[in-house]
Image: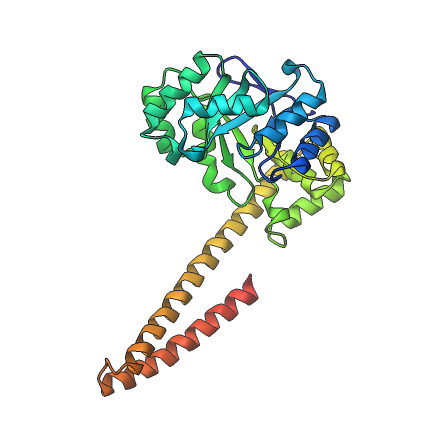
Length: 329
């Protein structure tokens, strides 16, 4: 089944794959990349607030009717501006009269508090400046606060999602689905682009070989199987074409489970690595502090002998911890 649309809780529909512009920077190159994405078939531009002007040029030059392009952008609190001012600036930069989806980028930007900020978002929708409104990076507790006073439910919550975080994100995803809130997923390809060599590589490559597709297409198909809207990006035309083609890939439940299970293994390893590194750093800091105190003559001589022995032990333990970390991971 190809990429399609997902119906939102306000009755509108959103394409379930989007081209994200957050990594493109500014200038002509940004405009060119958005133009390229539109030309290969992306009809959903998930807009970064820092290059709206460049994206707006590409949108205008595409010649597409406004109804043929879905535009998402975010309230970022840029320059300390409020929501009403920011949405109007965004519309001016993009050269459009409305956006299809307007998101609060992060709960910490919901000032002075989430209910007040959301009331301002509801006004944006009521004024016709955005067809749908939503949030980004909101956790369950944030959504509970929002929903307690909201007159309009958020249509979507855009979150980090890839196999190494799906375990901790699953309760949030389920909560959103239970409340008829769509999930947009960014950074789906991180296991391949930023964390290669991990446990997820195995099942992804096996599936790619079996289906004669590319590993990145498998991960996009995995996200699609989760029922989320995928936000992705690339500067290469052939990769963008491949991303769109990934909509035709149907993974089996076993494929999805295998990727999930590999992601869980990777998540545990990353947690263990973090804990061990923090312990090693803490031990080294203790050793350094005692070393400085010893050098400055702040400690009694008998205590210094004991500390010197302790430091040697700490250094030895740290060495073997780091060695084990290196060998295991």
